[in-house]
Structure formats: C-alpha cells, structure tokens
Image 1 (cartoon, rainbow over the protein chains, first blue to last red):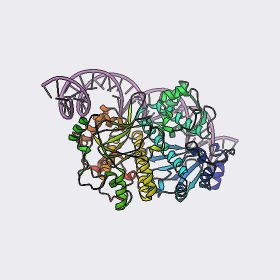
Image 2: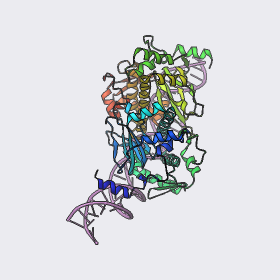
Image 3: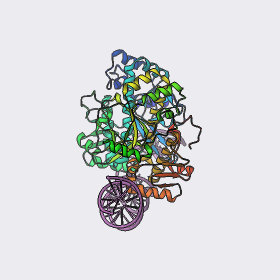
Image 4: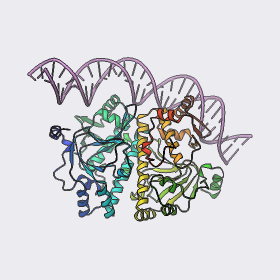
Length: 264
Length: 264
DNA sequence: CGTAATCTTGAGTCCAATCAACCAATGTGG
DNA sequence: CCACATTGGTTGATTGGACTCAAGATTACG
C-alpha cells in the first residue's frame, strides 16, 4: 500500500478521525463502561495502544491460516471478522468499532481460524501479546474489565447466531441496526438517533446471511414502514421503540449495566 | 425434581454414565488435549469437580435473567445453550458434551443473557467462581488451558454463525454432524464412525435454524446420498470425506493441534 | 396397553435467491 | 476533458428452497 493511497484515504475518511476532545483512548473509554477504573488504570490501558496505523478500507489485518499475532485495537473506523467458504460465500461474524479489541487472547492459539479486515479506513494499533499478559497479571481490575469485554463479545456472537437462525430479513437488518446504534452510542459515535453506517449493502448481506438484492428491498421496506432513513451511508432511526420491537431487540446481552439507559 | 425421577433416569440414561476406566474427570481429559498438563495439574482440575448431580433430560441449569452462578461442568450427557425469542422461537447456540465447561467466566457478569439446559440425562457439577479464580491465579498453565478452551468455544460459536448464515439445509446438518463427531472423538465418545446423537429432530431444527419437517427431509436426503445412517438416535458416518466435503467442514477452528489426525 | 412424543409424508404457499437490466456516482486514462 | 470502466444501489421477472399445515405411522413411555 503506497503512502499516497494512505494520504488520499485520510482526506476522505471521516470514520478514521479520532475525536480530539478525548483525552483517553477509545479502548480505555469503552472498558470504563464495564468496570469503574481509576485514572492510573486508564493510563495503563492507554499505554498499551502505541503506534496507531491508518489503514485503507478493505485491508486485511490478518488472514485465516496466519500465525496469530498481537491484539488489534480499533481506534477509529469500522473493521470486521469474517470467513470465506470454499464456495466463495463470505460471512461476516462481527463488526469492530472504535474501542474494540479484536481477539484479545488469540495469541494463545497458533493459527487464525478467521480473517480480520477493515471495512472503512481505520486507525488500528497492534498490542503485543506480552503487553496484554503483563498488564492483566499486574492489574486484576483491568483483567476483569478485559474479561467483561470478552464476555460481551461472545454474547454478541451468540446473538448473531440467533439473528441469522431465527429472524426473517426485516428483523435481521433491524436487529443489526439496533445493536450498532447502542454500541456506537456507548463510544459516543451517535448524533441523536443518527449514525454513520459505512458498509455497503453487499457487506450487510454478508453480515445477515441474505443476498445483496434482498438487503436492498429489506432496507426499502424498513424505510417504507417509517422506521429508518438511510442515505449516503448515514442512518437515522425514526422510532427506536418500534424498530427494537420489530427486531425483538433486547439489549441485555450487551451487559451495559453501568449505563443509565440513555442509549435505549 | 424427586429422587425417584433421578433414580429412574439413571437406569435408562446411557449418556450419563461416566466410563469407569477413566481415572481423570472428563474436564481434565479434554483440557490435556490443548495443553500438556502435569499429573498434579490434572489432579487440581479434578478437585474442582465436586458433588456431581444427575439431572433429568430437558432440565434447565440456569435461565436467562438469573443471577450468574458458578461454572457448570458437564461430566456426562448432552446439554445446550439456548435463547427463546418473544415470538416463541428457540435457537440453540451451543451443544455441551462431557468435559465441557459452560460459560467459564460468566460470573463476571451480573445476569445470564441465555439459558443452559440439559438435552439428555446428564451428570453436572457446579464449580464455585472462587475455585476457578483461585486455580487460575495459582496455575498459569491451567489458566492457559482454560483460555484455550474458551477460545475454541468462541470459534465454535462463530462457525455456527457461518453455518446458519451461509450453508443450505444439507450442508448445515452435515456440518453439525462433522463437528460433533470430532468433538465426541476427542473425549472418547465415538465408536469408529458411529456415535450417539441423542437429540430430537425438533432440537436439530432449533440448532440449525430450520423447521423440524425440513430437518427430517434433510436427514433423509443425507441418508439417500449414502453419507450417513441414523436410527434410534445412533448416527454412523458412512463416508467422512464426502460428508465433510458436502458440509465444507474444515476442522481448523477446533484447534486440536495436539491430536495427530486420528479424528478426521 | 393406551397416550404422547417423535418421525414421516404430501400438498400448497411464501420468502428470499437468482438472473438480468439499468441508473447514478465516482474514478481512470487517453 | 470526455469516453469508459467500476462500484453501489435499484427494479422486475422468475425460480426454488424451506415453511406451514395437516394427517398418518412409529416409537417411547407411564
């Protein structure tokens, strides 16, 4: 990837801009939603995140079969975990947004069983395995916060099994929208009921197990029902309660006990 | 549940019988597939598993919304993790067999976001949260083995997202069969290419996101293709390679590096 | 031995996939 | 600067895989 490409990406990549107002890294901010962390603990977390790199959209961070590496921390932008079947179909199994750690302990295994790649231009830092081990050995409270975030990641994956297994097209897409709204809200990336949904309909299809054509029709149906607007990858929820109801969305699996319901 | 029920279950519950030949608990045996554990470490693991209880089929161990408890260890029988939607549909998100720990660190969260229940009569032990914390603090190698098993559980859940998201009915059922075959093989519960699949077609439907009727037809198609036989809940794989091929089954996600390919 | 699950089969329907254009926006190279 | 390729979104027509409903056969169980 040439420097020019990176520079050009920077110019038109609103998702990759870390807000200047935030003293702490997105990771520290996210984890303090789970466990009440002290100033020095937040600083210790921040010290993990060194040398962030700006990556172009649709760049793989690591691929299935690769030797495991450190932990990727997403500081800005959207990334995803995915797998490609021999038949060529792709399934996206997770979205990662600012503050998310991808596969916190993956280095315990030898090889990756899935790929991680950016969806948009993204700012990503690689945390060395030893740094994670060292920090969790030294700070039980941070270890606890990291466990919490692992457990929530697992709960999200489980909910995605439910989503593709039991919900129909409208419900699936609506559920994904509800989930991403709440997660983005937690890290301060929503504006009222609006947020950037910087993924193509093809990518939504690979996420929900639908065809791109049907995602298109489904989005139109959701628009026609007065539940959302979506234009130029900017999504606005028009009626959160009705949307959540249609999606059978119950935010309990996100385990945001410390947030007093200003998200949903 | 009355003592009589338990006693009666014991009499006709082949799945709940721990093999007498095994000195170590199923948990210790399973984890030593991941990490080469010393005798005293295996004993330490065994000491976790106290006071096993025999539970009837279709008994919930814990329900969504309940306060989290210790860790459930399945010593014999089959259990599952599931969720029921407001519309009444059920999605099974994981199968647990002998040696599996259900939600190793769930006690870090306050409330369960899913249910865990038996499928067959099962022998289950509850490991107190403190015992897990204490043991992992004292034995880094056991902590590592437990992390490994957590990572594999996560990988399995991810593969289930792929399964319901991208594979058609035959592929889904075939994949589930391949996975359970390998997992049962690891804990010594297969007999050649045969094993007990003690779940109803309704439960297979809730697992694969299909209707029970369609699971029935799908099983018949697999039988007609000469891939399996299934009678009285006893499954035999007639041609593992063809079945795995049809299912696009790649066992890498099970991370059984220490097993030299005598499973598949 | 009777009742209840579970499994099986058939018929009809529907949701979502596929195939095939077409449009709009964007970017590229001559 | 414009022809042209590419990508993403949209629409229509058709097909097909899986669902639903309903009833009968089998098995398990009290």
